[in-house]
Image 1: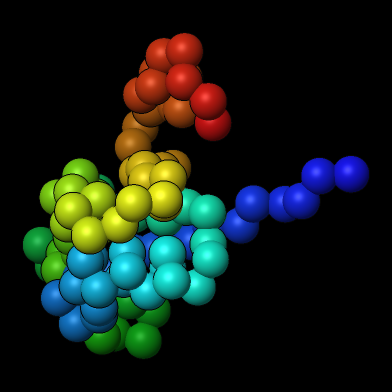
Image 2: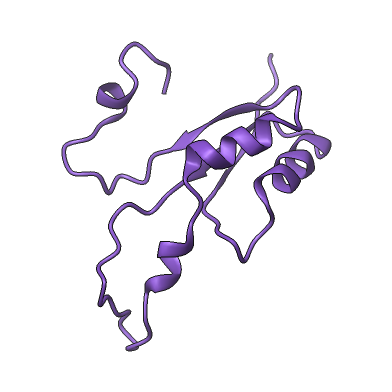
Length: 101
């Protein structure tokens, strides 16, 4: 029987841990991977059901920039972008042909 690899998927911006700090923390705790997500569609005048603004989603890190920061300070983590499913017409196979999902 083999063990299970467990990773972290994260959606964060400037109000959370920096990518290098998060990468170090995830690696130090023995996780196998770190995936950064992004929210791709932020309407200028968006509101939540309670009337509060949804602009907080606009303050998320670009996943590739965040992953570069994490890669600079880690040695064992597998890193990648997390798909949020909000890109019309996009699929895992379309974004990473031949890749493992």
